[in-house]
Image (cartoon, rainbow, N blue to C red; front, side, top):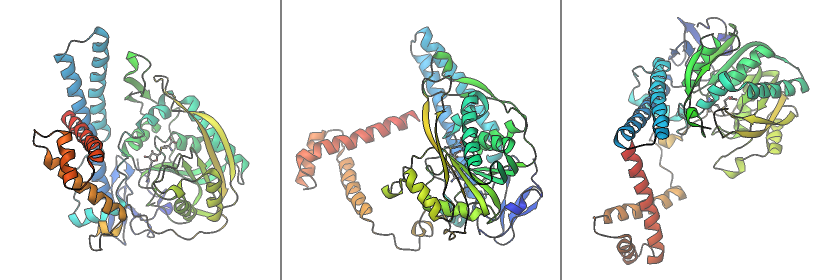
Length: 461
Ligand SMILES: C[S@@+](CC[C@H](N)C(=O)[O-])C[C@H]1O[C@@H](n2cnc3c(N)ncnc32)[C@H](O)[C@@H]1O
């Protein structure tokens, strides 16, 4: 699908920030920093370091394929080597078949990213600055796809209702104009916003290519068959459920999908009438106070920020685990009007195939941009001393603690000779004056338990 001419005015280079992007043969590029952004299955790949992010997602794909292959092999071995009841056999056979099909589906859907990378070594180092979070895999929000396009009618309706409510209650009502949805995931909410509110062009961005490639097919009218793997299946036939993913209607040409990192946004400053952040602000690594400035930069004067979702900040720095009142305060401190807020209890990920499901007291707000905030610095996933290797490695107090425990752990590992017991090792640690015997014994046991768990896990891979 081509986006030619339709959204170039809304885009800017995510690498050098300011320069508009040019479009040639369906591919964007930046004339200033000479970065070319590929099109992946027809979706612009607008990461600051396109080659290295492609290779990161490709590695995640290979990892998923490898895990599914190992899992399939294990199930197959269990089926052929052990005696099972007819019920267990039935369940394992279903899982085996679903795994195999799912592996093939993944390969097929993600074939656009499974290409050779030409990343140079220097590029790879610099790309550490925009490294993807290590806890985000292809399947992290895979369940959302099934909710969005298969069983989630009630949840999807409850979600769009929250957006409509805060839009109606705030200045501007349902006129959203040029709208950007960040962290769009399976894209159902972005699709509903585009179709049900008064939008002009809607751009939906996420960094997960699996979710976006599936959404792209479904919203353009291709039904997809994909397995859902519920967390707590209600009975044997629900361990793997083949679902048909389907969109109620095909989307029009003013709806655009983009792949990229919302922390290195590929958008021209002050270009959107509305920015929507659904279930996003509390799961990104960036401090909300900084992210709020990024949203401000994207909006035109008078533009609106609409937020929806949970407020479960889990930042390692405790002061950044904001309460609703702190969120509202930060929004106002960042150049926005006093937010219109709304709370409602809605079902969340209640698959009919699972005994597991949640209720969330979601928090939504809408706030208009009253003045420009200070432009936040470029987001760096890692500090420069790690990226360039030229600056001194800081002597963090946590590094000193880790160095001490690493030495002790290395010493314990060196004591493993097939003869010594945990008690013998604890005696030696005491003789070396590293710990008292009483402290050493549980510490060694805990450490070796972890090592043992790791070795078990590795032998399963
Ligand atoms: C909790 S899910 C919400 C998905 C969707 N908004 C919804 O309501 O179903 C968060 C989404 O944000 C995406 N995401 C997280 N960090 C991101 C980043 N830095 N750049 C782009 N997308 C990101 C994830 O891939 C995921 O799809």
